[in-house]
Image (cartoon, rainbow, N blue to C red):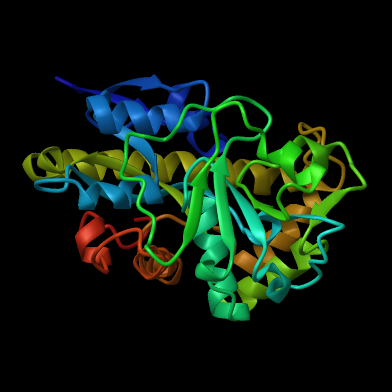
Length: 334
């Protein structure tokens, strides 16, 4: 008899074929769940153990290692959300910020959490590549564009050396950026003012695609934002089940990649995005035919970067390793 599992993730193309049943998970009768915004999935899993298998932001996951007792979860190397993040640094154009070093001494907003997933990566890049450290700026944490409940279901760790304040729920950091009340903003979500073309704001790296592609060529890092976690005791009790879940996620993602690649013959005419075929071709040339890899082997540099940044930025008390944080034996897509 099939094992029933509840599985939660955001609505992604790489999970679509799982959700619609096109790709089964061997031996599993799955029920799929999502939420209004993806942090609600994280909260339900962390606070209520609401699912058997759940998407979880890396920083949310790593912070559970600093809660009391045995760490409750272990991750599968299934990276549902990943994004290059030079593009996540927004500036008020009157603030005199023209290069990364100009962020020193400035007041910077950050979405949701000091060290949200995009923020951890941005701060790590700024430190590694440009010598700009978090303790050289002042930080205010809040929402953008819509009221956001505080992220209070994981430790809100802030290093002693860093000046951080928490904005009230009604504060909109995007509006503060436009008004010049903050000089810069780091955010996984793009502020409305940027999307609408406000002349008062822009990106620190306006030609961000070229910068991000160069970053990948030099480092081999395609930044990871979210993985998939399962309760640690479930992984220990039923390792074959966990491997089947992993292989199901891999198969769904691989099948969707193949659909995109096969559709290049017909200029991806099922998608209403001009030049999409050229973009897919460029991405495959740089990132490989499997341009969204799962498993540890091809993601080691990206995973190590997140683990190192999390500790360097004072968000976890110990320097966690891949062996601490991921189910063993899931090296590649096979």
